[in-house]
Image 1 (cartoon, one colour):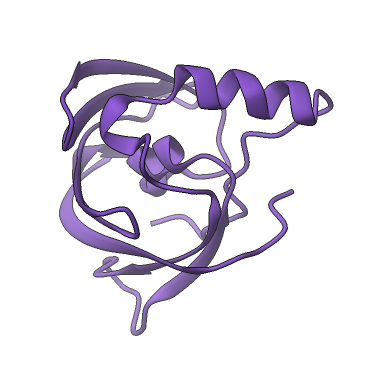
Image 2: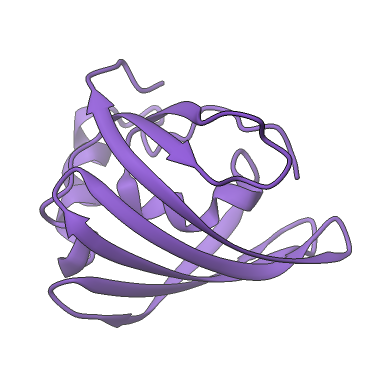
Amino acid sequence: MRGLGTISALGAGGAAALLLVAAARPSALAQTSPGLWEISGLPNAGTAVRQCVANTALLARVEHSGLACKQVVISDTATTTVIDYTCTNGGFGHSKLTLLTPRSLRIETQGISANYPFKYVIQARRIGECTAH
């Protein structure tokens, strides 16, 4: 698994980009907020990883964080969003994000990373504020 970099949806557009991200956010993630998220259950990680997240939909591609990827929402209900994504390096994934509470997500993800298959279930929990960049 690649090292986790800062997951960020904000670029040069700043506030305008944030508004566009909010408008395009899947229904199941509409109750979640950007901030500091703790991710538990990552393969080869001895402890939980804390990550500053500007857009919770990007948690769908935690295996490919920091890479240029295109995400497509496959299905979306009030509590579950399924996202497929492909990355420019040839990696791809399929993730199901289940809203447990507005501060807690269960993420089932699988795909190909660095030419190897991956499949795991992780828990993401919002634990506070941060400056996403």
